[in-house]
Length: 124
Image (cartoon, rainbow, N blue to C red; front, side, top):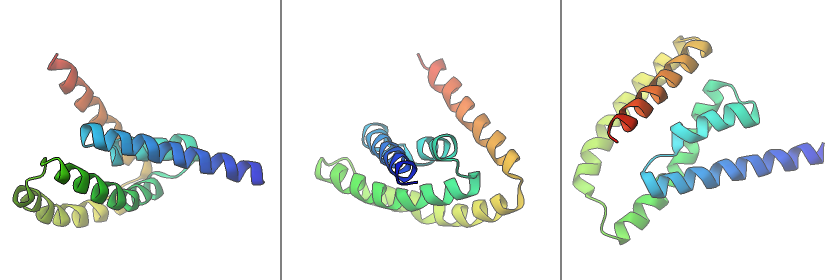
């Protein structure tokens, strides 16, 4: 039992490290990285993975924004203009997530990631 808990702790630490690396490097890492890894590596359901990811993002985003601010890479006004209305989106999205099947959420998320990948590759 302790061995399983240790393995789970290492997996969670690896997920956090990767998410932090991707957040600092690309400005992403939360939902794009944490959610799939929590589902695949730790056996979380999609809803639990999404909620857990959002909790982690609070810490990741705060530290990343602070460090980027030190480098002069933050426009606070624009960040607020994006962030404040996003709260409404979070409320709507969370309500929708509770009404959609877990399978549909997975398929929609996979489609989103696929579309982003195609878009990024098309730019090369």
